[in-house]
Image (cartoon, rainbow, N blue to C red; front, top):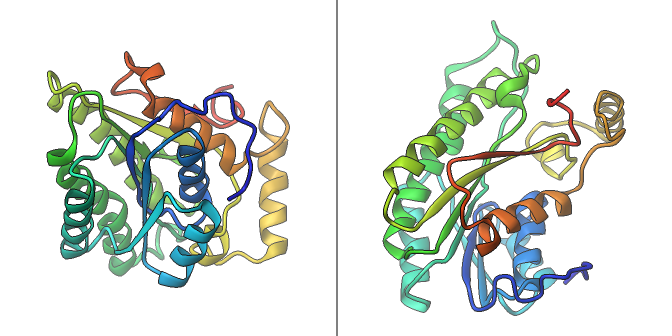
Amino acid sequence: MKTLTNIHATRHAGKIALVTGGSSGLGLATAQRLVQEGAAAVYITGRRQAELDAAVADIGEKAIAIRGDIAVAADLDRIFATIGERHGRLDILFANAGGGEFSPLGAITEAQFDKYFGINVKGTLFTVQKALPLMKPGAAIVITGSITSIKGAPAFGVYAATKAALRSFTRTWASDLKGSGIRVNIVAPGTVVTPGYKTELGMNDEQIAQFDAQAAAITPLGRTGTPDEIASAVSFLASDEASYITGTELFVDGGQVQV
C-alpha cells in the first residue's frame, strides 16, 4: 500500500466502507486513504478481476474486492448481500464508478446515451438505494460528480448531463434522508489525470499531456489535481468532521470553474 502523509489516522476507525470503481484512479486513491485513516474494511468493486486483485495487493489486507458492474442489478444485489453477510452494516459509501466518452452533438448515438446514463445515473441511483438498508445514523454517502456538469465542455454533453443528474439526486436524497442521520454529498473534481483517460476516453499519452497542460493554464492554482487530493476531500465528507454537511457539492478543482 502506498504511504501517504496523514494526520487523521483514526478518522474512520472501525468503519466499513464501499468504494465502487475502486480498482484505479479516484476510487483506488480513496480506498487507500480510508484504510490508512482507520477503516476496518474497505470493499472495492470493478468490472475487471485482474485490476481488482492488483488493487487489493496495493491497498493491503483490509481491502476486499467484489467483481461487479453497477449497471447490473444482480451484481449490486450480490455486492450488498456480501457486505451484509460479512459485516452487517455499511458506514461509508463512495459511489464513484462511472464512465464517459467524447462525442459531439450530431454524432451521439443511442447506444452511447444508454450506456453512460445506465452506468452513471441508473447505476449510481440503485447503488445508493440498495446500500441504505445497511446504513445507520451517522453513515455517509459521497458521490463522484464533475466540473463538467456546469462547465459546458465541448463533445462531452452526455457525460456532463449524467453528472448534472447526480448533483440533482444529491439535493433530493438529502431531503429524502431527513431524519435518518445519513448524510449525502457530492464531490466535483477538476482535471485529474487517471487511467480512465486511456481506458474510457481513448486518449494517448500525447493527447493527455496536451489536455493536462491546457487545463493547468486556465486553473488559478496553475496545475491539475491528483487522485490523492480528491480522496482527501471524499474522506472529509465521509467523516464525522463533516457531520453538519449534507446535500452539498464540493468542488475540488484548483479554482478552475470558480473564477
